Length: 223
Image 1 (cartoon, one colour):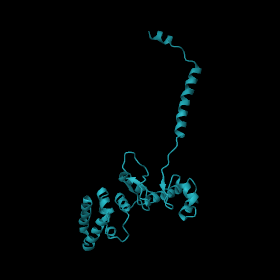
Image 2 (image 1 turned 135 degrees about the horizontal axis):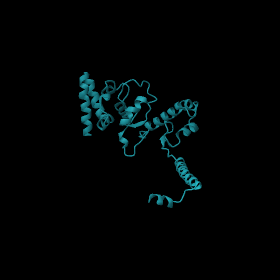
Image 3 (image 1 turned 180 degrees about the vertical axis):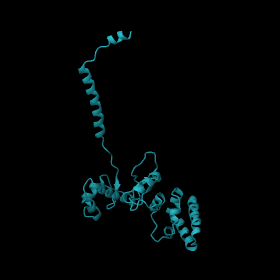
Image 4 (image 1 turned 90 degrees about the vertical axis):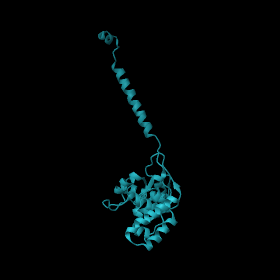
């Protein structure tokens, strides 16, 4: 029975085999060309020098700000070198950070912009989880072996109004606060920060830092 069925199947010629192979290869080539021909959409970034949103950032720097020292240091490097790309990204991130506009380095479509925190080394915005991994191997991290609180220090940097001699910073209070939405509200509110400063000036004992931290978070929840 099986032998009768096999005999009824027409033989496949060599030309048919070649034609089927060629057609399959053409399909793969067409798909590959379609992928290669897709245009990548570049995001706009704020220029640190002119405060304008530009799409081709490196070309914008080369054409308009070749007299800036930081740009000159970049342009003398080989075009495809890693250091050149990292320095351009640093200027790109600095511009976005100065504009207070959160432009994530890698953004998931389902993530809210408020969940991103800036890296204190390169000024790039990363999600809370990826920031920990990135900060350890960041190109601009001077000491990768040194332990630090990437999320907390990045959040403090985003608050943006703490000077180097601010008692909130010198006492270590800001680094004691958990990097969540409540702490962000507390750090950004000038009245809450001033209340904490006055408390620390009157109570300089180290164990009272926890009390000051609780006061700041309690006031932030009210706000």
